[in-house]
Length: 93
Image (cartoon, helix red, strand yellow):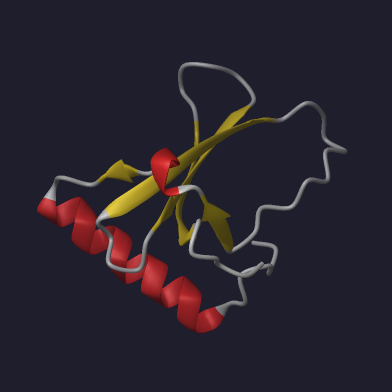
């Protein structure tokens, strides 16, 4: 999973289960500086659902949101950096 000049590598920083809808996992990936994020929602269709969640994704810059809160930006930067240091991008998490 290589970044290209047309994509931005983001690292998994948060995984939560939605309170609003059943069987929905919300994955948040962020840039290593914590300033941008990518949110991905995944429905769990069954207990045998074997789609891996990887440590990183390469996404189109147009699909990134801005992290405006300083505390959240620092949290995302810390976690994204830790993930990048400890995992290869394609590692299942």
